[in-house]
Image 1: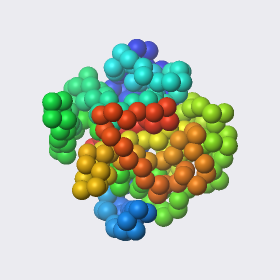
Image 2: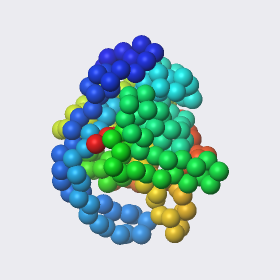
Image 3: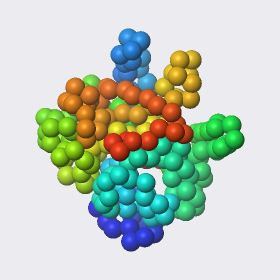
Image 4: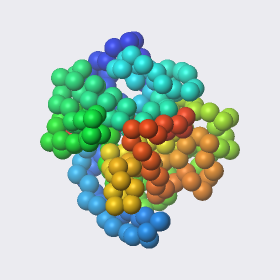
Length: 230
């Protein structure tokens, strides 16, 4: 993983992405017992959760509880992750994917923009499972940092085994924000996060586990994000 050295360069960012192929993912909501399928168009997804080094280079800030350049950034709200995406897009001359009205707290997503964004939940699960229907791509201790092996903190990204598509830390280390509203009729504007974190038990660290919280106010030391683009 190359060093950013205080600024973002297009070549460095481009090397962080892998191409996710077209396919179909099968989703389930354990709360409602609903199941559904989603067709996925090919897209680009970052190999790693966004690190503190990258976050600082874009925002000049580091909100994290555990400090280290190669550690995933955490203690970030959904809106902070979205602002990061817009700032990175702007810095590299790409179209911003989100329009944000702070007064109303309404965020509009432009699906035709060529900038950076959070993955939608179905994209995240599809990429995590690498086209399979498995809840994990290997033995948990070999692929993820979780309660039994994390030493009660985040760990540097990219140390555990990747999945078949070359994605690291999709499970464990930090949960990852997704673009989607969870269930507007029940939870209002709450957004989805996926993947499990360093303090979670094995039963929570699965490709199919879904969580949600408030996009503007919720932030915690085991919740970060990774980014996608067209």
